[in-house]
Picture 1 (cartoon, rainbow, N blue to C red):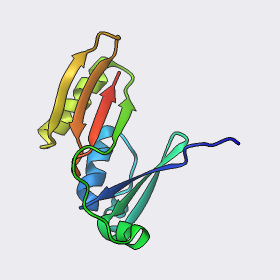
Picture 2 (picture 1 turned 135 degrees about the vertical axis):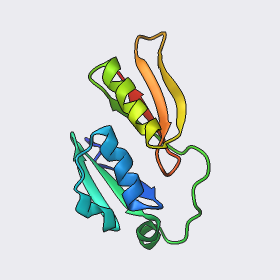
Picture 3 (picture 1 turned 30 degrees about the vertical axis):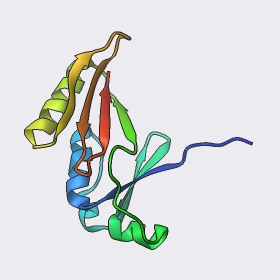
Length: 125
C-alpha cells in the first residue's frame, strides 16, 4: 500500500492575519481568500489548507483550543540571505520570533518564528 501526504490543515482564529503571514513567507494566496472560512493553497505536491475555528468545529465537533506546540512546519529557502530577509520582514510586521537565525552544527541556517496562531514555523536554508 502506497501512502502520500495530501494536505496539512491549519486551524486559524483570524483568516486574514494568518494568510498575510504565509504570504510574507512567499505563498501565493489571493486577497479574495481573506474572507473565506476554508482556503487551500497548492504548495509543491501538498495542499496547505486553512480553516477557521468555526469551520473546524463543523468537521471535528466540539474541541478545545490547542495549547502548546502541536506541530511544526518547515519552509526551505534558496539561501541563508533569503532566510534572514524573510525572518526580518516577519519580525518587522510584529510576528514573534522563537529562535533567531543561526548556523547549526549540521550545516543549515535555521530560525523559528510563530505564526499568528502560535504555531512554530521553521525557516531553513
